Length: 397
Image 1: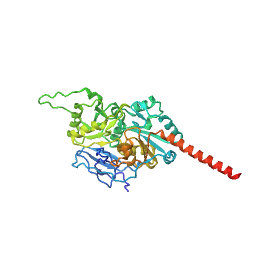
Image 2 (image 1 turned 60 degrees about the vertical axis):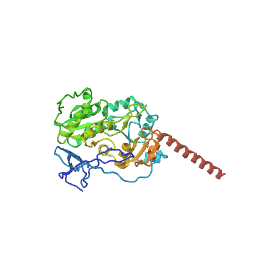
Image 3 (image 1 turned 30 degrees about the vertical axis):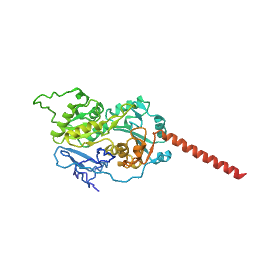
Image 4 (image 1 turned 90 degrees about the vertical axis):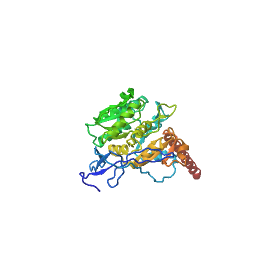
């Protein structure tokens, strides 16, 4: 056990990937262990300092170059096939906190999924803590609070954790220098969270209308004081942003490449799936030949942050989501119970495919099944009780 907060261990952070078939390149930050060394990426060198006060690891930003190769560690832990959720009460009583994904679980696009308000009210009435975690970085926590309110849901800002917030929280956790800038390929949510955290930024939607005139001998300038490029979902994505982000990452010593998520698709409307933030991240990864540090699901960064903030034991958490390679993996990496709902991206054939290696503890159609399953359990219990009473009455006579 490390007892001295002054001991500093050099460590590089690499991504760990869990695969579906075809392979999913989603990478995420791993829990930092001072006794375990990962291979990292060029230009990223961190110092790990044990924190005996919070019992959580911190990483310090360092601009020194390192020459390490990228690598992947794959979680090969075998899991039993997921079971259909039959006893809602048993699962509810076994945990103190429910973490819900939003897109595909609470809503689709701007449409609330049936039964969500009553389900959340029931869980709150039983004293459960509810937390809402989304990989969508287009909104800040405050903006998501307004969306919940518009949909008729009473959710406080403190219960919401978006990947836009995670990006800013991550930079704070590594003591990212305040004299360095952040270039943003993404939307307003990231900008607002960076501003609240006190970081100087450039880019975002403002660069969406910029074009490059490729004249002979043209050289594109970039800000050499950019110390991090944060990439999230961006409906204003263009070639200017690709080139600017690429220059910062490739030419600025120690520049971090941070992704809010690598989701392949997202729910912009309830009519169809749309290309997700992973498409923007993939473009920058392709041009820089670098893999990003992913702060959204399935990275354990947000799980560690939540556990620390609320004082939650991870074994007393149930993660509820509609994606196997983000939501369910997020819960499993954090040591939580997991429930897959089939109201979003994942279908039952996808879950049960022999090519799928990610198995949640349970699955069900939608979160309102908590209510119908409770009702069914109550009916069975009541019928059994009536039958017993009838038998005892006949026995007495």
